[in-house]
Image 1 (spheres, one colour):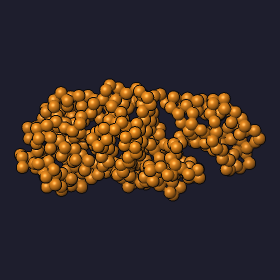
Image 2 (image 1 turned 60 degrees about the vertical axis):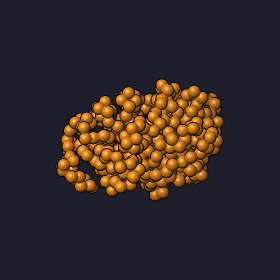
Image 3 (image 1 turned 180 degrees about the vertical axis):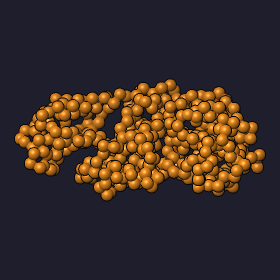
Length: 428
């Protein structure tokens, strides 16, 4: 075998520990794949007092991440810190020092991936980021290799395990959002500050990465329309089940002529859709194109060992290329910035739950406002009333979002409408 490939890990939290464990436990298998031993030479973290699930030898520990990035005894730098600072500085420093880099940092790659990949191209080194897009799901590898000859027209995914766990529990047990969130935090499925997950920020970062790889143009994360799941109630999930649907937080990317649609929001899926049965902390990504037809990849989207395995796989790729004296597998080649379709132009179908005064003519008044905005009605359900206020659910046919939102604003302004309680998009 060739001389060993030495790895430096930045950050020794959940993903860093998982990566180290996979590299150590599967060292013989990885060596066979690479053609050389792969050894962790250094690990940098700012706090070594915290308890961790793995025992790291003291001689591997460091607190100087910047020094690790240029260390002569490190060939591949693994970044698992997360966030932008200091991760961006460290990754650029490693690339400039001629090191190949593996990162699981979705925010970093979503916002600065172009800068990092261009720097890597100049230096002739690899930057791999499988763990940043789908955790253990090998979606980047699939898009760049197995499906490289295919035109990808659509990427549709459940890409956040925390929100999928919450919606699954709410659906199956009728629990409220706040109660399930508290349980998810107690179990370690949700952070104490759950904003990035439940408000769709994590999913939007992943969609920016997937959109760029699938469609060949940089997708600005700030251009992605985003809604979270805080306003979903058990009542909505019950209605969804009645009409044969399931609510999921979806990341949606589609070609639209020369432009792309990119959005993250809750949606009602038909129960027969492959993504509808993806439950708990599991994720899945559904890819569609004229040549590949429909492909779905399923697995855990987060966690120490699942994400660590994806990162370790990227390490093996980088190491194999170093041994062969070659640069990595198919590099990302984004042809400029993708033109994003404004949300107002996107065609949507809506579920709308309203509270109205229980008096004659209410439905007619509301239907008139929908009609004025050229929004047609697919179904109406009036279920409950206390004699004063009734609940009416509307399923609206597909129409441009701009028309739908104008119609909703007019509905809210009607004297007979007490409240528009919930609005969820419906996918067929």
